[in-house]
Length: 112
Length: 109
Image 1: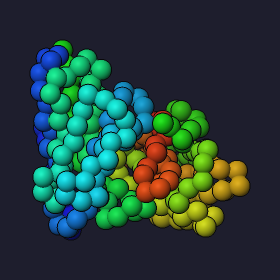
Image 2: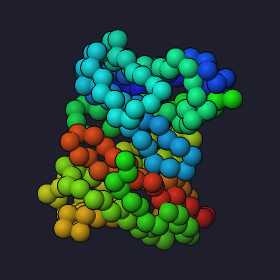
Image 3: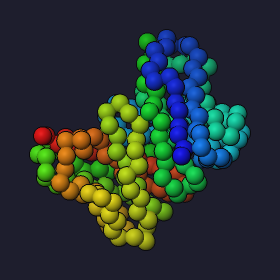
Image 4: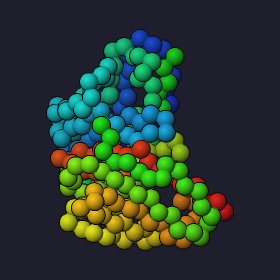
């Protein structure tokens, strides 16, 4: 069966510091991968998605970037965090588009 | 951008009662999906209904889709305290999911 791992679970970072959140999927190959952000009490906003290694689509212009260095690894990064980057970040995978997505347990990021 | 709008935003019921949540959207879709989120956790997929389907069942869940009205509903029958969570609809357009704001369901024992 497939599993998705996302870490860390919580992170507190100062403004201006860099960020690296990692997500890995096991048990499948060439999944679609997604990064979402969820503000408190709100729905999910799609940030990035990837259909293959090195293929990243950005949905919202922002202070963040994503990379997919390996088939089942998806990384969310920032060179300098802003206060507005605080939130709950979720990684997800699916077999293909138009299929259910399967989510990790998320990273709660607080910027001080 | 948000496409799905859920109604109500919050719902509180007694154990054993049925819970109905509604979702409206604006553009044409490939499918519509419902997800559940327990507090502080990731989302769990519940059910997917394709644009050419009108109703789908999964255990105590019943989902309807009316593409002419651009709306969907999720019915949870015989609710349990463990059903307490937030429920989101998500519309699949061009292979990407757009989530609504969610309905927070509280089931009192």
